[in-house]
Length: 202
Image 1 (cartoon, rainbow, N blue to C red):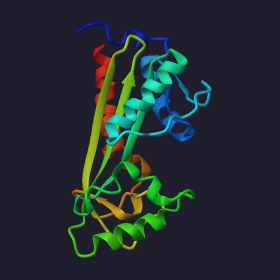
Image 2: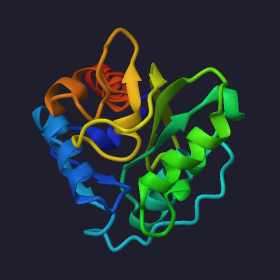
Image 3: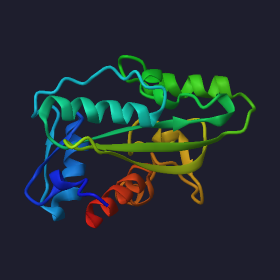
């Protein structure tokens, strides 16, 4: 393969296309062994673009490309959410928006429960990472975990839809999981495993 990751050699910078300090810190810790320095979109003075894609992959690529174009540096973005097939795949790419401007996920929980009714409560979390390099190379990495929805919400750990999602093979929600245990099996960790494998190979 061509030297697609030339900009990701040891000592280089990787811009995380996010203003979420927790997410940036998590990613920085994961790539630290590779001696790649992660900086946030905030640090690079990058304003988040409007997410106009219709898929997780399109939105992740959009954010990564925008960040790379502004900074000229290799950039990594993610887009993730909850998909409930019985209600047409919603909330999907609109997962955050369903919680409203105040990020009140109780509102989103109620909407899902009302739309779901007696339909199957199968669901899955998905995360798509997009890596955009200055040479024009773009790579995506997808992670997914299947599960079932439960109401009312249970647990105070995690965030977002975690309190209503029971991962396949388990009896407790992500909201009840120990965070470290959740991170071992989550959709985001699965996407990052593929991303790290790519970095190790290049």
